Length: 248
Ligand SMILES: *Cc1c(COP(=O)(O)O)cnc(C)c1O
Image (cartoon, rainbow, N blue to C red; front, side):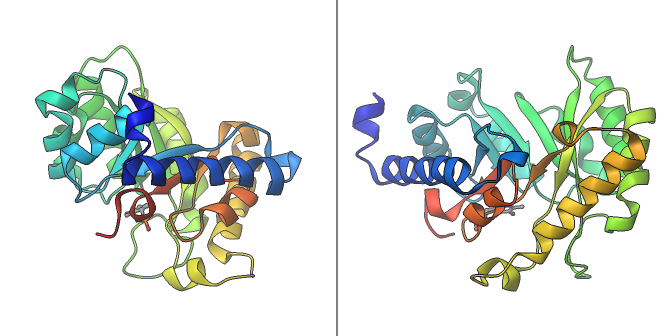
């Protein structure tokens, strides 16, 4: 099956990205960042269920969605429901009143966009009502670029927010921090991306203040335009859409 699929455009693109991820991790990442290959999250937003199915047939398991309505629809599609080991990441802005819709999505694996204590509490309560046997993995989204139109918590509030999750949200498992970053910085070649740098220093502060080790705080950074650079700087989750599924 995978050989046939690998000849399709999507299959070829996916294979190419996986190869580039591996090369970046093996050849360009300093050893202090560990040796495990970063996890690819295929961002399928605005793309049809058929595209998700095709990527799955090619071996992809982690998928990312931005809109609650869309992850609800895709996640409960009868064909998708047959894929028991599919892992959904929510990577879009989340409103508190949408938490119950989101936590009901079968195979929801991680929510990467916690940015306030109120949202963490709401998501925690919602997850606990679902009575699942596992905790819901979450990341804190950090607004590293300081742009007003971007969601994410300011870097200086990161420690308090994570402290709140660790101490008051028993249904949630803190997994790490994520950033989207400024577009201008992501397309700038040759320079260290300031958003990635800021996320790294955020992790340092979090580890220092909360007694965590760097391995306890995964980094979700890097998209189509800049994932190799993100990996070079220590990213453990890259979120890639258009390079796999085509332009939106
Ligand atoms: C759309 C999106 C991506 C993927 O972006 P591409 O440039 O298509 O790879 C990654 N992360 C987030 C949060 C997104 O909204």
